[in-house]
Length: 189
Image 1 (cartoon, rainbow, N blue to C red):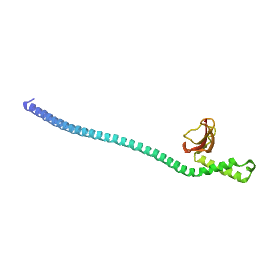
Image 2 (cartoon, helix red, strand yellow; image 1 turned 180 degrees about the vertical axis):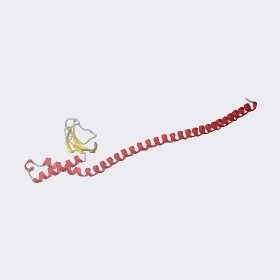
Image 3 (tube, rainbow, N blue to C red; image 1 turned 135 degrees about the vertical axis):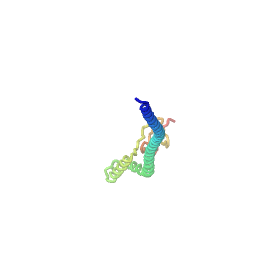
Image 4 (cartoon, helix red, strand yellow; image 1 turned 90 degrees about the vertical axis):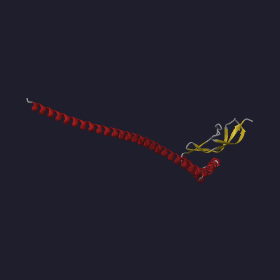
């Protein structure tokens, strides 16, 4: 091999090496650009992930608020129904009491009359209507006085704290006292 051929081979190798170095430098620059883009994209993904987490939290709070609103509206609706029903029924209770007094005070000889049967029928219908409205009445005779349900009008000699006479029954609407019973209680004097 001649010197010239060796020099040409070295030039080719050096040209190839320079080309490879240039390619490697370009590849490294491209890799660095890609790394910067990936780092930027990772930062953006973290931001998006945080935003998703915040949105999930906000959605959970909104759902909880909505469920609370539904419960509150239902409770308010029930309370309004109870209030309106109570205010109307309280006006009719004295009439029901009077019908009961008529039934209880009618002599046996007159109980076969049609008027008496009509009064009993109306009384039964009114009580059934109250029952359908979730209004219940209770008889207090013979029971112990409970200030949650009874107003003691007077006391007579009898067993202490036992109800011996009832002027008016007590009524509950949805487990709330609609009207206290008016009673006479026993008292050892």
